[in-house]
Length: 369
Ligand code: NAD
Image: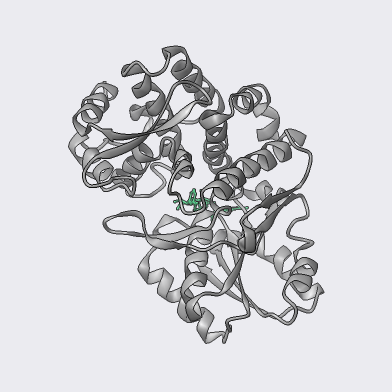
């Protein structure tokens, strides 16, 4: 575990820092003033975050005499749409933001993905800064430059790689996040342990209560997760290889999100939690992993209150055929063959190409019972 609050993303000329700190928002005005002399700022946020955290951001920008405009969008996954992208782009253009000005994404993964994508296309590319305010955004979506929106054909199918210039991950901001949202973010944090860092997963098993209560373990865990993400991104910025491991649990999870309509029935992190449990169970079924690890992952997620079973998804779940339809739409599909992130046990995930869709369908059918 690290005690260093600055995590560096080593991407050559696109390198940047993540500041994981209790006052990351309060000190942002001074940081921006030194990084971008003379720039104006377009803050994109959602209505919840505008209520809870925007005053702090405005305060630090005003204290440094920085000029800014604010675009507020409705909260929720449905804002990752073409319509909202257009709204954000046109609003920022109307505010006369120029190419050397800066877009600030203040919010969770939805705001980060949308505002980052808007920044990537306005005037053929503006710089942007991430101020992630959900746990999920702090440990995952704000780092690594994947930006985008959803299409009726599937999640995140329209987008661009566009790295932020700086990330301010403010620990105090998590104080206004709901416990359910915090838990959903925890699933993405635990993912790094499950992929290639057994020690981190075991540490989480010991320390999760302190992380949820906001003790010192929280800051350590978030910085450690950011470092893990930084490592994957630096090694494979455009996801041509090992970065795909970060999709552990996501092929299943995205299908659950799609059939439940991207709403409160199932949060992204909750879908990923079930997906990661299923990846362990499927790996066990095909003889790759030992069943005890699947049970251990299930038990830990249950302990923190995350869903682990298909039956934990509220309402009636769509048919296996419908789930398979979405699985076949996944970004990781290559000419009809499925790619899954499977595992040889906790901390031993690997990329498996050419997975037979019939085998996955039969497995999902078993998991319904
Ligand atoms: P979100 O942005 O919808 O935020 C969750 C909810 O919490 C929203 O209602 C938001 O208004 C609220 N919220 C956020 N911060 C708050 C705060 N401090 N106080 C009070 N309320 C707050 O969802 P999310 O879970 O942050 O992100 C999910 C999105 O991230 C998905 O669209 C997913 O596809 C994307 N994602 C992207 C990447 C990537 O690499 N780009 C990685 C993982 C996930």
